[in-house]
Image (cartoon, rainbow, N blue to C red):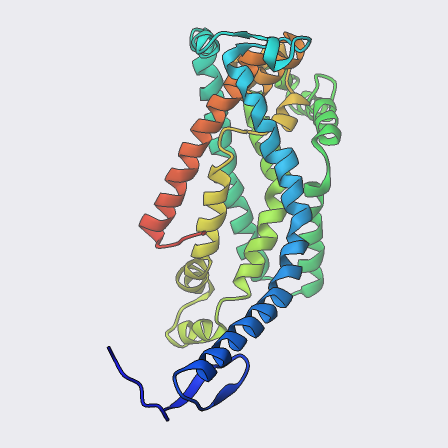
Amino acid sequence: MIGVPHNGILKGLCPLSGVQGQSPWGEVGMIRLAGCKTRGSKRWLRREVPLHLMLMPGVVVILIYGYLPMLGLVMVFQKFNPFLSFAGSQWVGWDNFRYLFSLANFGQLFRNTVEIAVAKIILGQIVPLGLALLLNEVHSRRFSRVSQTVFFLPYFLSWVILGGVFRELFSMNGGINTLLYALTGEKIFFLGDNLWFRLILIVTDVWKGMGYNMIIYLAAITNVDPALYEAAAIDGCNRVQQCRHVTLPGLRPMIVLLATLSIGGILNAGFDQIFNMYNTLVYESADIVDTFVYRLGMINRQYSVSAALGVFKSLISLVFVGAAYYGAYRFSDYRIF
């Protein structure tokens, strides 16, 4: 047993309450320690409880709209009938998944989804990055601000509006075909050709969202240490070399972050865009998982099969997200969380 001198000086026993002084290791010391713990707990409660109460509305919303609907995933293993609810619907086990895997166009759906999404992700990173680097070299602040506004404006427009605009623009009698006919004497059926329609989807999506990522990259460029540019200039680097050896390495964490986050939606491919622009003639190249789920559930009323496809898509997306986070940490030594 380790003994403590009866007249030992107990200092720093209660830093929160400021209690210190000469006290035996006995009743008086324990009383002081207990008082310290009580007062410290009260301070912690006064500081932390209001913050937790501020989080409660958001937590409640997430529970209601994010987690509570997951109980409905039981329909994946049922032949769901809305009039019989979950309790009265017939249990079919894995039959819905077997039916999905037996569909002739099942592989084509995922191929279209991945190809469109990957093209959008790659161009959606390269184009905004290039614009940000170019605008960073512009010395006119007025021109830079006007350009940022022009590039950022389409991001706020809905695909319901833009879908109608592009359908009219690329129709047989639209502006693009009118110009082509005047120049070449021929027209192209953009909205009915599988190759042209996919290109239109990718280009218009990049055009709509490029302003958002461009602003993020411009903000990241401002955090690059100006001393690095001065050192590079002293070493004889021109503007292109400074961009390559200073700006791009400084943007690397942001590039990795945006690319990793975008990979999480690789199986989305833009339902709202495609739904407002596609037609039966381009199902071969433009029909994706989300549009097929919509037709199964809302038009054909195969609720259980559409739910099974949605769950399968979520599992695949989870694998892509996990792989993206691992790659970001493994090759760039960068962690999001």
